[in-house]
Image (cartoon, rainbow, N blue to C red; front, side):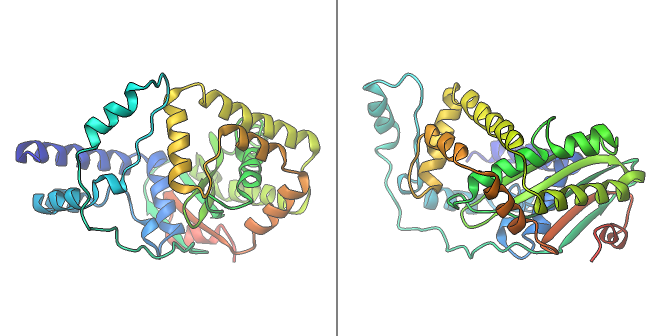
Length: 308
């Protein structure tokens, strides 16, 4: 790496880190993952602390690149107008590189940390909240039911949380749920932005919706709408070559078996109302949550909102 170029890039990355930290809607996602995986490496920020970016020696960066950026650790995915010349071009670019004997250090399994709370106290009229539960890994049999559960609870303008918390009660300006899967674990997270004064009322209302979906089966019509929502999103994504490449790259890297998008559509179609209820009961267990908040409250004040 050129020394001058490296110095410039350090400053760019540090500015980007500060940008995320100063934007509560962005920063709440990092803060929540730190809470959910506080005892695991998975809870660490991908960008890293700005202090490390500013001081890490060039020699360490060069050594890391030489050790790990090699064909044995590389996956090249090509999608779109592919012809016989494609493989030749890939081999010309990457085929001459040699592998080192270095291997990635073994990473311990990530562990979800229940009832862990992180707070960034900030004087503001608006608060950003994230709380959630442990989800499932990439290959888990309940991956499709969990995605549908998220779609029903907080996936868009027709979801339960959006209709009840935002439209009927007017407690927030945005609310959503999201599912994230990793190699050995996952997250089911609810995000909301709202007036700090209405935070207690909003938390109670969200917890009520969670209790309802954990104890009562969803209707057939609601499940059908959620299926069409997820399938429609996937079909639209697959119209772009970039998304097709990302799909097969993800399948190759993380899944036990590489599947086409059509297989995912079939998995979604096979989910039943009983599957949704079973997964909801398992995920939304009492006391199995973690949370993060950015707003004008202390750790103790924020913790008290969630009860025991």
